[in-house]
Length: 201
Image 1 (cartoon, rainbow, N blue to C red):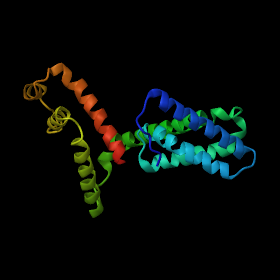
Image 2: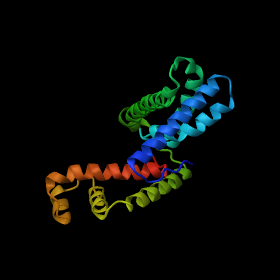
Image 3: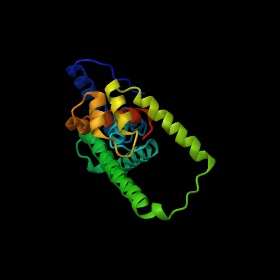
Image 4: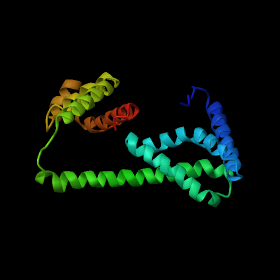
């Protein structure tokens, strides 16, 4: 695991620059025939690729596939990278594009299943489905408790029924009706960040 300590912007920039330079050196050495240099390049940049890919919303398994395919793409196309200092950017761009493509396809598949097929499929859940659901709910509750009290209260009230009464929510939380939607969106974004950190999405 790569630990990033808190520091000034200059220190972080210098650290990033050093990693980019080290990556360029490892890439050059590997392309010149040093096979072990590829291991060093993977060690240096895999954490960055993981952050890039997970930021698109992919689950852990899909993210792992994208990161692996990105390294394979580098092996296939290493000769097309003229400037070794560009290797980190090339890897991040390739990983991000693949991740967005997979994420888009997954959303399309889920939409098809929900909108077109769900009504015709029989409900055949095994006993393991209940276990998974309970685990998901436990992770959700844990992540929810990490939000501030206002976000927790708002999300709980809005999730209490299919059509929440914004007037009641406004009175209960002393919040203008017009700010409920934007606040809800910000709270859901924070919750998504916590779920991503837990590997739950």
